[in-house]
Image (cartoon, rainbow, N blue to C red; front, side, top):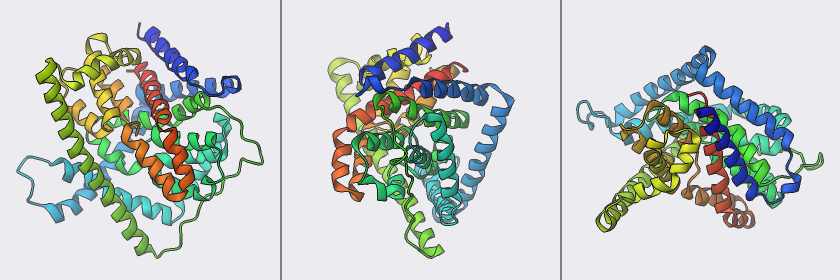
Length: 392
């Protein structure tokens, strides 16, 4: 039965994407079929084989070690603040982002990361039927983050037509930054984080290829990555450390604001209607949760967490998920995969602001198709969770 529901879920995702397509006649179906098959194979390997288990354990152990090293720095500055046996979220989950950001800076400075990103992108362009720039951007977004990635292609942003700019922004919203992957792994199972990272990479291309189909000519298919201005090693390191600190503080501020606002709105709705706002959203999202493979009796609770992710952000939703004792292991896995992306309302402002900072006119273009971006990125998350649900 779960296979029938999964197939129905995938068909509905494609139906919703096709209905919103801006050029139905130019959709190329062969790359789509190839990428869906790849998603299924990769989900099976990661979730149902000893090879996948080994890969995930290796990936998560790297981050466990990095977080342990990060804890040395956090404890040096904040040791003694936490109560015995308690681990404050800001200290244990957010502040390690600073250390991960510093490591990414070192890998950038030594040209290791640009080399990896560029050549993985070139290989992907052979599979997805898109341009080299789009493929590079998708890989770079998953490592550098949804705002930082545009700096590396700033030479080309002003030259891009709207349809190519949409694909770049869609990739940025459909993935997550490697600097906060460790934080996710402290809230949900690492295997779901890794699975989502891989599936979303292809899912972003799949949905964008239907919503926004186009062909890139050989003359247009040029990848020109911006070199960062020359800095000394310690200048670079200081910059990346401060960038990581800004991310940690920003996430903390957003969590304080969103959690408090959701509590306020829940209280108002509960007092007036006898149902919280999140419960109401849960009923709206329940059909999508069911199509992703969540049993119907758990669909409302799962839908509530999915809605929280879109209205607030993935951190708030992951915190809610960690408190949910009623969800089964299968439902938890499916919802976890759904949560690992930047598909929420605040990301519209972040992405359009990042592009506007580099090219004002193009930033205004991004702001105009912001809701369409969120629509596509949410469908990417639904597709990834549905395919993961086949093997949970």
